[in-house]
Picture (cartoon, rainbow, N blue to C red):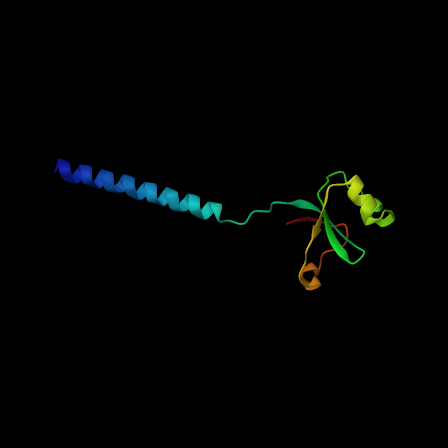
Length: 95
C-alpha cells in the first residue's frame, strides 16, 4: 500500500514538472512587441521613431537626415504598402 502511494506521488510530481516546462515553452513562443514608436512616412520611405519625446510638427518641417540627428529612428523595410493600410503618419504603434 505504501509503495503504491509513493509511486502515485512520484508520478504526480513528474507530471507537474512536465506541465510547468511545457507552460514555460509556450509562454516563450508568444510574440511580444519589441519596439514602440511613431510611424513616419516621408520621402517614399517608412521610419519608426523610437524616441518618446518625438514631436509630430518636426516630421513636417525637417528632412529625414535632420530627424535622424535629433531622434532615435529605424528604417522599416515594408514589403507591400498594403500592410500600412489604416496607419497614419505620426501614429504611435508597437512592432
